[in-house]
Length: 239
Ligand SMILES: Nc1ncnc2c1ncn2[C@@H]1O[C@H](COP(=O)(O)OP(=O)(O)OP(=O)(O)O)[C@@H](O)[C@H]1O
Ligand SMILES: Nc1ccn([C@H]2C[C@H](O)[C@@H](COP(=O)(O)O)O2)c(=O)n1
Image (cartoon, rainbow, N blue to C red; front, side, top):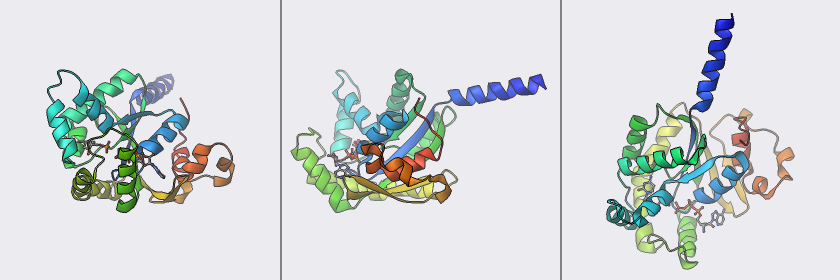
């Protein structure tokens, strides 16, 4: 009896130690980064943006990948997974946290296979969030972001056309993959307005709790009630 209790405690301890990850997908400009900021603040996730890590690596003096990363980003193409995955892994190790929102990954089949090879045994995928937004609005947002001084070499019409081609050709099949497998994928519309993200549920409604109790707590809840309710359904508490 005691042995069984000890085994159960040890198993539960070990499973708590395995880093938990949530993948966040959506078109360029769909609002992934914006929503991740709210979610990480509210639920204690560490937000890791694959695009930001690649941009940092591009800037790092002496990086052997700098030029390749810049060329891929400008052309709207996807950097080989070995580079992206090792940046993500290093950032996870450095953070000292145990729960991660991985924004903009996996973006294509190479990303998915590389992560599965290198990381799936070391991490637990909790769920996948997908933010849907019309292409027109996404492009407008990225152009505005560029005009406001983002400094990004891909916030221009030429790069955006290429990024959308890549998104439709390479990323949409990954979203289809998650819709078709057992891991729940939740879909959110992020084009309604700046202050509302509506959920189009691909997960059982029972995951959602009463919306009313959440509404008056903070602007996060108003902005992303659907996402918030979905995550609450996993009983995730701020760490
Ligand atoms: N719901 C919204 N309404 C209006 N503007 C928004 C909304 N969400 C995000 N934005 C703005 O749109 C721009 C793109 O948002 P964000 O950077 O979060 O998108 P993203 O999906 O992470 O983009 P990328 O993939 O290009 O990094 C930002 O300038 C952000 O302030
Ligand atoms: N998994 C990823 C994520 C990003 N990139 C490159 C190519 C993207 O166009 C660019 C910008 O990413 P964003 O900030 O829009 O998420 O970064 C990649 O190659 N692989």
